[in-house]
Amino acid sequence: MVRRRAVDAVDADIETSIGCHTFRATGITDYLTNGGKLEIAQRMAGHSNAKTTGLYDRRNDDISISEVEKVGI
View 1: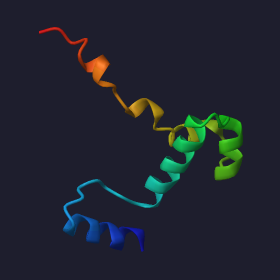
View 2 (view 1 turned 90 degrees about the vertical axis):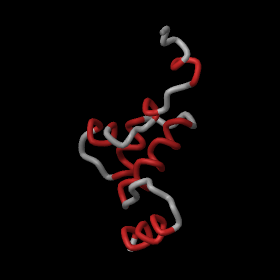
View 3 (view 1 turned 90 degrees about the horizontal axis):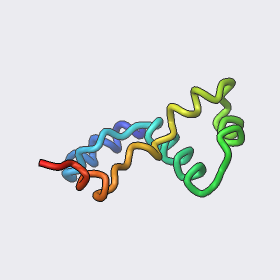
View 4 (view 1 turned 180 degrees about the vertical axis):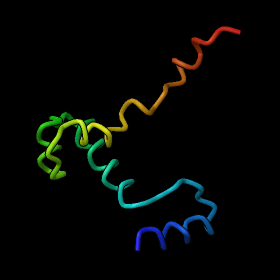
């Protein structure tokens, strides 16, 4: 169902790939961003290994403009 809806999103000019794991990553990332603990997120996600939960953590994916501005050309 999620993938079918994602196709509709493409028709609406949304080019981001969306699937069930997108929602899982968003939930885990938001939980951790708001002060949640990885061990609790692991239990909530039903993962037997914290490394698996860490794969869904997208907090380091964002690069601030101040970091980009450090590139000197």
